[in-house]
Image 1 (cartoon, rainbow, N blue to C red):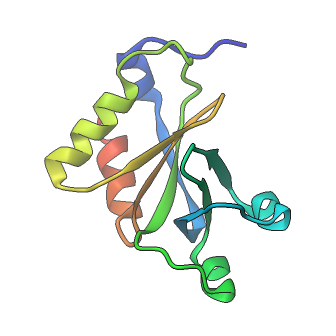
Image 2: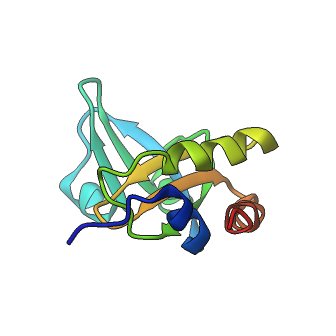
Length: 129
């Protein structure tokens, strides 16, 4: 199943959802399998393993983090071959001075923005239609 590649159409049809929890990124050289299994995302890098987990989970087990984030999902099935969606989103947020971290899934792109900015970002992105 292929996704959309037309940038104008993706932007005009895109809806943004916000997950309820607050998330953070933690970096561990060798996380437990249990922690990896509970993570919302796992990124294996040569230096360490990055886990995206809730701040509640990080706080409960004493893991430090420096970026508490709202997790937004761009509800448009963009193709992995699509050009420009990430750049368009980044430009909107750059214009507002809002940092974001992007995670790409097969069906959707996900962005992590500072906690407390989720609703503002949702409105900004959905107004791109």
